[in-house]
Length: 556
Image (tube, rainbow, N blue to C red; front, top):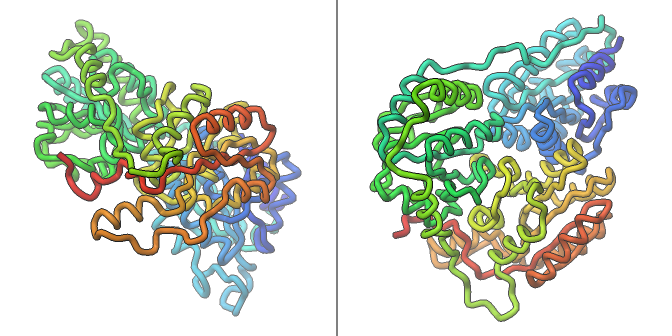
């Protein structure tokens, strides 16, 4: 069998029914074999969009995602998508092409070897594994290495560059299982963590997006409810816990709530961190009086543990879901769950008293819609189980404060790598993986101008994703941050603003332009019935101040 046939058969066996990319000569032999295996090839409009969509597909399917790009620029265009997948810990396999290995050392167009644009070296910092397959008899071994790196332990992207003559070579067929046989790491520090929780007087549970990567929603909820732990979410952890839950104090950091801020200021002695690096986005606005006496840190990667908060830290290294399950089980076997000094009622009262930190509104002309009201109208109109992918920009920080998450796992946002426009592709891939789910991308005009052509991908493959674009004619975070720091903004405002609704229609999608909350709710209702993608453009106040200024100074 040809290498391409063997690869396609393995992808199908792994449950990969959609593969995303843009073909070119060096990678084209594999396209026919995808089709022969019944795998739908999703032709994206840019290779970065392919990597984003494959990542969203993997995230929704909880399996491997596959993205394909040709040699040279086809590969370099996938670098950003690899970096974003690494930040999300998404298992992603990126395949890039290369002119025939037998011609190595000759001058070749779009050469991706060490004689040209060396894709293997370029992918090394943004993947967990990057290699070039130089011989056909090495394909099986290299593929096994790649998927083991992508799908076990600290998950993330892997890259293989396969030359044209290797792809078309004949080999003995092989079948590689996904690495479910590799045991997950269990920390030896669980007993220490249990003791610390038992001695805590005023603890808090801080959840990051690692909860989503580990699928540990039930485990953190059991921990919170059993021990009546107030819950605070990092920006990336917004979807880890229902924000309507009485124990939830909302977010801290950018887009944070006053309830979370006040609770941290009230003298927390133990912070239990699950799946957060505690980045500057998460700790934005953190003051010395908020410093806990001790930290328990659940994480699959020890790199940043103990770096952000200079206090004694108990590291629970390994898979968060497995470690939390074992800790919860041990505590249940004891003399009931540990009684703490605070109660659920007290935590709920703190949340109710603080509510959210209201975003200062501008003195805009009458009739201009506030982004806060836009986000609330969106929540009103969407079903409770709609999955929202938040893009990187002010639009999502408004949502961190004002969009209620009713079911865990229905809000996705990255606060580490932060590639603008990535959520557009992620939503497309997620919808391909789960056609029966309502999938929404919350994005902005800056993001849609970067990767908005992927709406055409959704239209061509009849994927009814709802793209919500908050349009204020500018790169809002840059504009407001620069203005706050220097008194003026340069290079962040579009002199020819985007008409996103008209743009959507030109790409084959439905497009609606909204100026008030009622129009937003109506547009969402229509979009939910539409058999194809819809772009809902919401014209929002360009002078409104987003909840991001804690990154620039400490507010009191």
